[in-house]
Image (cartoon, rainbow, N blue to C red; front, side, top):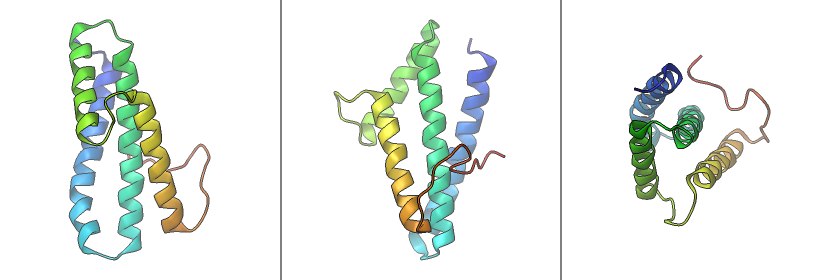
Length: 121
């Protein structure tokens, strides 16, 4: 049985994924910069959430958690992670790439504790 923290993180991840699924068509069909910015902020939050969940699962001794961790590893391979690339490195690189796109869209350098905004608030 997963702990309450992991369950809460997974619920938030599902919400973020659903938000991305809703934003994707609008972003693809529109030149609206604000939609793109919202999409990439949400994508950053989703990637960060996945990174947190993966890290928690990686250190869990629960066999069921290890199955979920391996599932995440398979998904990251399907979405661009190289076979020999650690998941932590993949998630960190993804977040950096997303930040670069956001910097281009917003025309400024962003960092800090509240970057990017948290769509869960």
